[in-house]
Length: 117
Length: 116
Image 1 (cartoon, rainbow over the protein chains, first blue to last red):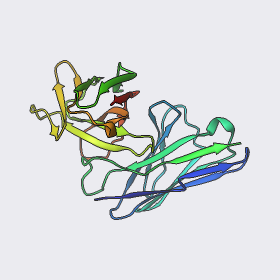
Image 2: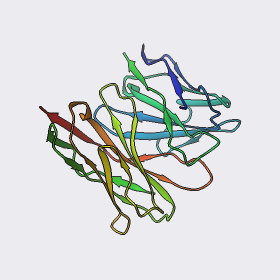
Image 3: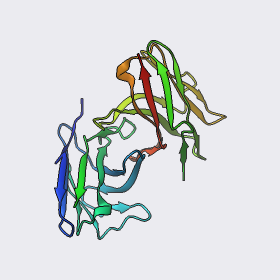
């Protein structure tokens, strides 16, 4: 089945530094990638939608200058948390529908646990 | 905007028993999909079951089945013969249909505890 690989699975960084999270579709082309954030014991909240070759669409309240999204190819989308602060500590998950069938279930990465100290 | 409501933050069931998790949603769309996802402590998102809104028949996957009441906008999940491995967070999710890819909109989740 289709697989989405997310890397790293966990990262610890110092406040003020930037962190990049990668999400790759391994056996299908992902023209669209969704980025979610999940705080402890809470639900997954959609942050942004990235589309290959165009600008990402951000949900209300999400700072696009802080959470930089790049969807440079049909198999890779990246989320960069710039100037990270402790309040950015969270679990970030990417997901994608296979481009051949948008109505197929989304495929999820295994998530990235970000801790900002 | 579509909203998904899970009114049970926590549920408990004894092993081998049956439990039902509730979910309601609000939408003005006619074409949509509903899902139940399981998130164990590893936090991996696992698809449990899926229902197309245009299908009247309730979806079933082994021990998991749904009660889809379209008019009432209700989508409950029944887990039969509960197993210890069923313990996890369960999220109900909504997704618009159509030709473009749409994101999932999740409920707040229900934490399911399975006791021996």
